Length: 562
Image (cartoon, rainbow, N blue to C red; front, side):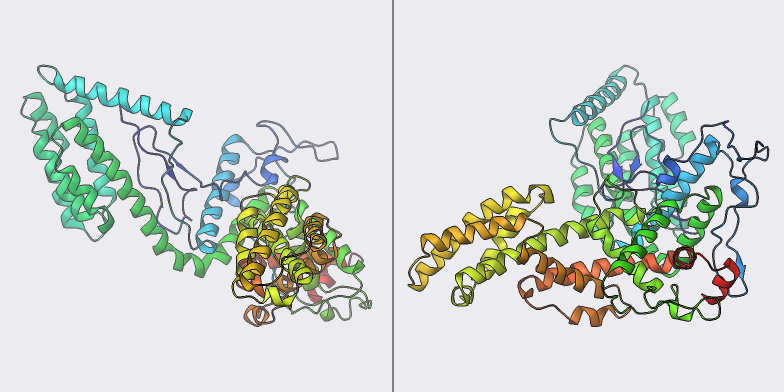
């Protein structure tokens, strides 16, 4: 019987080259799971295209495959004489149905790739304890189980003679936890812990009624004080005042859980520089292994790029694009095909694809497989863009109706911005209409208050009605002020996709000065995500765009041209 522990949050294991992020655990109830921002389902290629165990995949020619799939021999990316381009073609053997073991292994590889990706892109990523709501079902179940366990231990130690069976198991786990917190160079302290908590000797002492639990717990507390982070010193010191052995053991496990969490976060910080150096190579390698097992893992990505190519070709004018090393410009296609005047470059198509993600409605279309790990991040960028669009539009409308004299009053625009931000905070875009109604009232009240302070006459009833009506009409997507604001914001974000992101951040659009700081931060995050994605999956995008933009070109000629 083992005590339940606090629930932690962590996505999965680190890459095979890195130390494991999760400390050893043996007590039931201790589990590691991903935080909400990372807790994403397996890619659609794992959800929609997997056959049931034992099911054979038809080949279309009446034959059934007999060769089992071997995940350990994943096909490596093909290296051609024209560059290192991953293979986008199915393996020579037909696709096989994956067994349950292969499905679990594939899911584990995806989890490892996701945790490495999150550590690289999310500098605030850390392990945190899960705290259930006080009266929630989870909280009540946890309290009931913990109380039952520790009451049982107290009853065992209160018998005559005491029953130390479960206490010994707890001491064993405490020993293992302390050892897991040691660094490799701390060999002397490891030997001391092994000697002081010699489990064979402890069992013999228990059998002869000579087990001194208070003395063992004092040694444990001294060792914890040496190993804990400075922030835990007060927690460890407080344990020394406890006299009840059961309560003391319970608190020791609680503080040890915090110390393990600190160690995991320290490991994450230590791994981040190494992962940043190798993340592109690592993610591309793992995705290629997934693609070898599931050749249809780029179907949604192909459809996404095909739609982006159609949108780019249909646009009245193509924006200038900067060539990327992974996405060569279409102007390099010479000899194989004559480029038509309206043929978009691969870079402009890919940039259009990234920009289309800002309009992506969750649940309406399948997300590109290559962007699944960044889906939550990009959806957050999309939400921030929607809020900033409304805030900027409200301020522009107020300036137009009330005049520059009022809006130039010190602090007036900042107060309107804060009010609008608060009323929009946490709301989905589907609830902006009711928020704009409240915003219109608050803006009119703030305008009247400021005019009164300046000694000016209040807004007329006509102006007040006009201001409220124009603010409420911002909810319409065809609203002129909203359209112009949105277009300027998107134009700025499109510049953040260029390699020279710093220069793009300096070219700030006119009329958006009140949201300048917030928009630059959104642009930095958007550019960071898309740049990393382009670096990792650029070769795959190149292969897909060759087929989309130049379907009549032979594969060999296309590879040579790109």
